[in-house]
Length: 162
Image 1 (cartoon, rainbow, N blue to C red):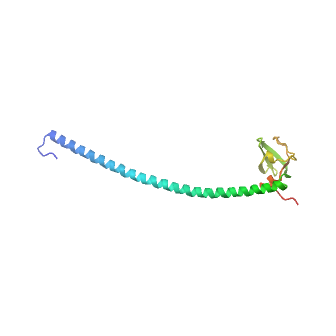
Image 2: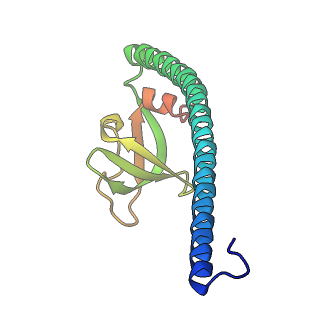
């Protein structure tokens, strides 16, 4: 600090030095704060990544188990379908006597069945030749929808005839 009898110039120089020292101290404090924050952010980021990796590993394991179960069901369904197709699977099955075709995509038809209370997509390849409903949508025209028995069985529409 400047002495009591210091000139204005000496006082200004002393204040300037003090200001510079204060500025340097503030800068050092700011740098330390940034360093601490970076370490916290790094620790957070690292723990976040580890948590996500663990979650991904768990999800992947669960997904794999679900996928395997799904594949096993598909394989069993495929075997059942092949067995039914070998026997009577391609036989005709009347799905609805008054079905209405609403949409024809060229690969499948969307039919209104059960007096308009349900809709069902039927692949064209599963429509039996005994079908009487027009496959091209015509307003107000209904008819008998006949599908292959295996398709009705697989989709839960088949009712065993006595």
